[in-house]
Length: 162
Ligand SMILES: [Zn+2]
Image (cartoon, rainbow, N blue to C red; front, side, top):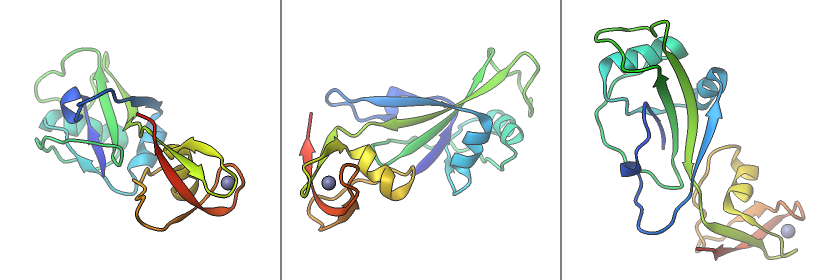
């Protein structure tokens, strides 16, 4: 799932052991691109949703839903910088700015090619196939992926590297 929110919280994660989270700054244009194929807004405040709507030129509903994310999810954070928004504002006041970030929980699995033995992070394999969307590879399902090493569509083996 792809979410749009206005702040990132550790509460969104299920941290039972060490995990890694990747924060990638985005330009506004990149943020719009990330959201064009659909997203769910979890911006919990109506004014903030309005301000982000007008900055991105997208319709964004406010939604107080609490989310829990894992490696399959992408969170786009629209972070208002400059203080607390004045009550009732619908566009960004002059002294404020909006910064965009893409946040993903990093998978701690590596994938090994059964043909050439190339080992690379799950993200690297999956990105080759599906662009930017990280899907969780299922070790039980027989799937073939293009190998980042030999370039062939190969059977792969999943290694846990925790
Ligand atoms: Zn290979």
